[in-house]
Length: 128
Image (cartoon, rainbow, N blue to C red; front, side):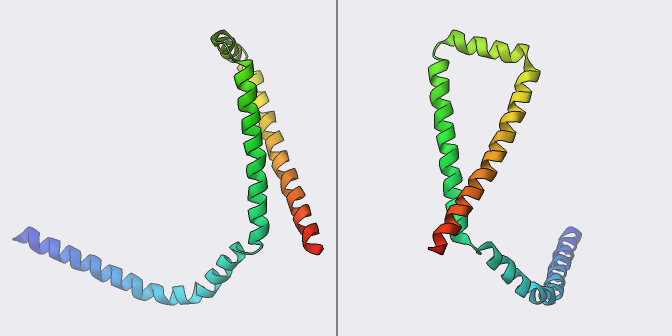
C-alpha cells in the first residue's frame, strides 16, 4: 500500500514538473520562433546551387571510387599479390600512414577546387 502511494506521488511530481517546464518554456519558444524561422530559411538559401554542388561532388567521388576499384582489381588479381601488398603494409606502416595523410589532403583540396569550379560555372550560367 505504501509503495503504491509513493509511486502515485512520484508520478504526480513528474507530471507537475513537466507542466511547469512547458509553462515556463512557452515564452522562450515565442521569443526564439522568429530566429528559428530565419535560421531554417538560411538553410534553404541558394538551395539549387547546393544541389548542383552535391551532384558534382557525388560524380567526382563515384568516378574516383570506380577508378580505384578497377585499378585494384587489375593490379591485385592473384592472392600472392594481395599478400605481398599486405606484408609491405606491415613492414612499412609509417610510409603508408604518410601516404594516407597526403591522400586526405589531396582529396580535401580536390573538394575545394570542385566546389569553386561548380560555384563559378553556376554563377556564370546565371548571368546569361
